[in-house]
Image (tube, rainbow over all chains, first blue to last red; front, side):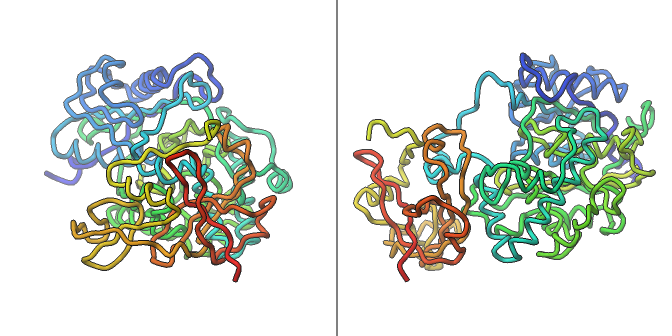
Length: 379
Length: 140
């Protein structure tokens, strides 16, 4: 098998028809609309889809809803990073011959769903963390941030979190699909109410209704399609705990491991990356992930993001969609990192388009800083 | 007790002993006899060595504040009624880390807490059968 025939490409991307506040549409409807739009973007018929990967719902539920009978099925759910991890799974399955055209779907009516999922009371988190009020992501991530502040300094950490919130909003102002597009100043950030100290409201991602999907396939299929294939050069996954008290080091997430392996597989270094799409469940998630990925050393994140370096016009392009902080965050946001990276590499992002980016790094974080998936894409 | 609105843990087979002991105002940990490390949360086969040679050991109930957050907004009504309240990760003297609440701090604010502070276990009886181990700031 020669190298070319072994290559894997993302060939179609799409969101659901409307994202943001979409009352009346279920999570599954967001899956289906996004799948339809991603397949249309690729020019591939649903009849050719023989692999289905999803998270949240079982792939069995989604396949029935879409009306397909896949020969490869994968419902790996390790939180919001799942859809980046699915890139690696799709690559492995295609190369092993289990399928040729993989559809990866996400849909979540995070804001408008008429029912809420209930945690299994037998899980350790339900027994040993929830009874204390650790029942959502802000409670867990804010504890990790408190420890970072203790080790590396509260004021400089706070400044960095403000820089990230403001820079991300500037990108959102250039994205017509972004949920929050009003201007934001650092004063707005500092004056926003507390959610879970050390997190202000503007440290936290938004909650929206949204779906997203992408189509991933072999070079052989990709070569005849209408759009430029976006190649997968590296992909890696891991997790090192589930509940926050069991995280080995609150200031060093497992992205340190997945990032290094993805770079190694791609044969690239940090200076080769033109765009970084970093899961921003919270401003702190971005800060600590940049360090874990090796863009800077532990504790140096605050200098790395200072002076609006990640904003439009800055010299480190990051989260150009406006991120989970301002563009969309349905609950498991990772899917939307992939969509933005592919569109930037294709040159389809309008007012926020970077100048001819060649490579993008995507890093998803899931659970309570628990899981990570890193992928490196290129034109 | 009947009007307790927050989340009540449901003991599982491996953790019944733990919850029986907290209702007697004692904190017990599971310990691996292969490496002599105590671990949290309790399970019969150890996560450190994947060993079946494990047993219960009583914790001193002393530890240090490892990380904390002050919760102002909670999706659960029972917790929201008590906001702001402190959630924390405690590093116990025996080594393991567990989550809990810091109680006994009037009007919680970050200047009243410092990571590394010594803490001591107390027990909050939430039902006739169950008490939650929580922590107070130690005198020293």
